[in-house]
Amino acid sequence: MPDIAYVNGAYIPIAEARVSILDRGFLFADGVYEVAAVIDGRLIDNEAHLSRLARSLRELRIENSPSMTHIAEVEAELVARNGLSEGLVYLQITRGAASDRDFGFPQDTAPTLVAFTQRKNIIASIAADTGVNVITVPDLRWARRDIKSVALLAQVLAKQAALEAGCQEAWMVDRDSFVTEGSSSTAFILTKTDVLVTRANSAEILPGCTRKVVQTLAAREGLMVEERSFSVDEAYDAKEAFLTSASNLILPVISIDGRAIGSGKPGEKSGLLRTLYIEWATNAAQSS
Image (cartoon, rainbow, N blue to C red; front, side, top):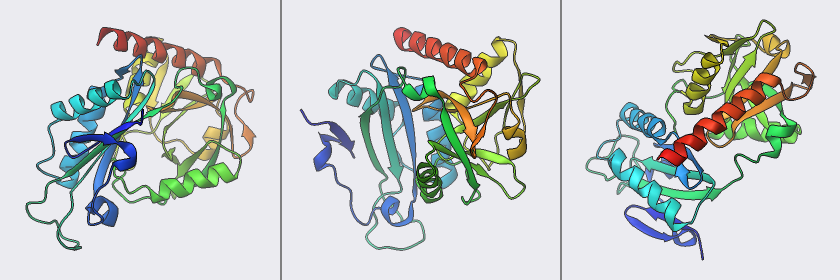
């Protein structure tokens, strides 16, 4: 049975899913997206993702979009129709298709909503056992990185540079040599004094949903958590490092730019936080 996608009110085989070539998401990257994890057939931390989606829509002034309640229903329906036990739900909302290609916002255009699912082993992750390698690259993105925009070319280039270097992720670096975030993840380091550090939320980074839960879990374990900038050199010298995202949960970083982090193996605190997050997510799935 083919996977089912959602396009503007219709559930159809993903191979038949289509949007107009005049859609502003295609022409101008004028849209936003979200990705939520699915564990045991349940969406994880979805309220946080929908809250971020609503904020992104407000910031881009995309009006008349479907309600968050309706979007949650679409996501749940896709999980059910595709028999998804573990993986991801991707959704995207654009300003829609106008009659002409013009830079200004079109009047009375209905937003486009598309969504689909993707199977992925999130919990039983080989990368969680082995750790991942990271390179640093200049942060070339636009100035409103807090909006989860579909304009992802800089991140695509960063991820491709990582893959070509034999790494799994790229950490982007600003002009002052401070790490902003990963191409598709949030960056964390654990200092040699056991302080967990991640950059503070601002227009320079995306406010990660997984990041927020991890900070709460770390504080419960008695770890000091600091939201501040950290340099590439401080990352090189860290006791541990890891990344977070909805699609990977928590993955330990074992090297940055070819330099081993700590022992060069997944760290103790990174493993503990991953275990705690999986417990939290599993309990959330069972209670929903």
